Image (cartoon, rainbow, N blue to C red; front, side, top):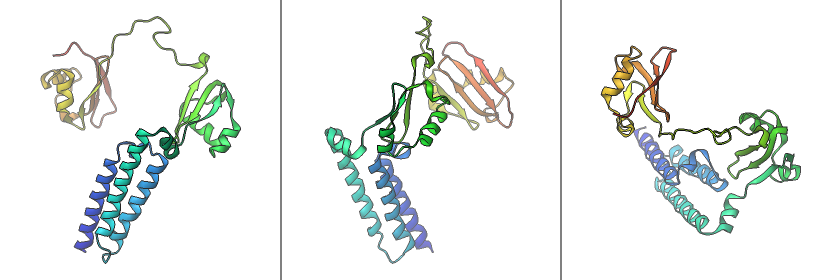
Length: 236
């Protein structure tokens, strides 16, 4: 029993390391060849877990080989545009100048139902407001509305906008994020002063506290449906 346990732990750790070495895109932006690779790693790792008589090297070596293959494919994709197009495919325009391209959608096996679902997911319930929609190689839909329905920005209204600062998560689940607090230019004394303003006297009472780009501190208390948005001064 312990042998099986240690084999599972070893294969799990090795598989996680392999997936992490393939890059962050493995998690949420899988290209077709990356998806195949992820499935193969899972299948190869399963065999030594299920059968104790299978040598561990029969799982570790193939995973290592797949990792090397992924590195080779990635290097070739970076150097060769044609190879990248072969492995990743190319984006397809499914709505062009406000007109749905049925032939392109059939070529990409993309249905009207799929299109409407993606548009609703991005807040566009009316397809007549869409100028261009492009199906990316990772399966996501990029949507560009018509000019009349495009979001208004400060430059459109000739408004002067103060430059934004980087946002920071300062407290999470009752624990101060020391690195973020230091990079924000503040210290724990300042942080406690802000919490005292809303009658919070311990960091452990805070579920979340974050500093946004306008210098405002959002505070959400533990076990209380009450949040506060505090105006703050300059950096300490």
